[in-house]
Length: 324
Image (cartoon, one colour):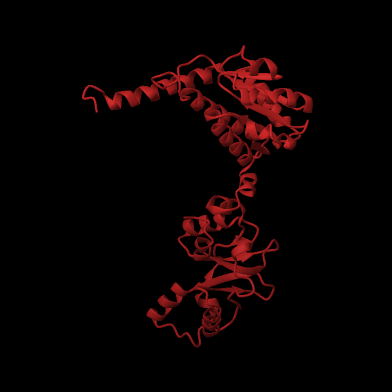
């Protein structure tokens, strides 16, 4: 390596040029970007991204982000498009064509066919007088900036600007669409994130195998019930099934240390009255929050009428993979 070559300085200059490109792109956002957001928001079909080379790779990511945030979208390779994939395009779609030069032959060749189909076409390019910008119905043109490559050839600043512009488009449209956390969870059912937003207490609670005894029962019968159900708590309910209290395995250990007569004691005298509980319709992550706040490891589950229908344990929430 050349001793006079400053590796760190060279790398920092790449950051500087790409940051400058992002700042210029941000400051240049105007009516054309607003129009693009409106086209995507009102699209009755799909939003389709297409580009060749590096812009194509970025296009795939933009399509994935749009879909992730509630806008039906996919990427179509321009060459594959000319060999049959254009059959996926309808007049209700919005085609976003990506080419910084605006002269990529594989991309520009698509435009006449797209015009015949009748879909909306949007060029995102760095040259307003390019073939792509002229032939598409709409265009968004980047401001002038340098590629970070020292040869000023490899797509660097331009692809970074395109990537962030795509994120801005996807996020802005999602907000305009009033896309919620619950919507996000529906589109991301796998993994902890989706489970946090979708899994309810009713999905994890112990219902038919819940440990519950009526008020007035002996402590001995409560212990037998807890042991037979394999749970760390037993719920005490009145004759109408309404919550009266709970006894946990920790409570039992403390009773034994105090010498409580477990054979003759009544649950009413040793239970924790009015304990924390959770509605079965709540998200499981909310149950976990309540447990953490109360420093407990389980709680009774009630239905909409306030009747005891189960119990949920912290360990069940962890096993479900809702938190890591």
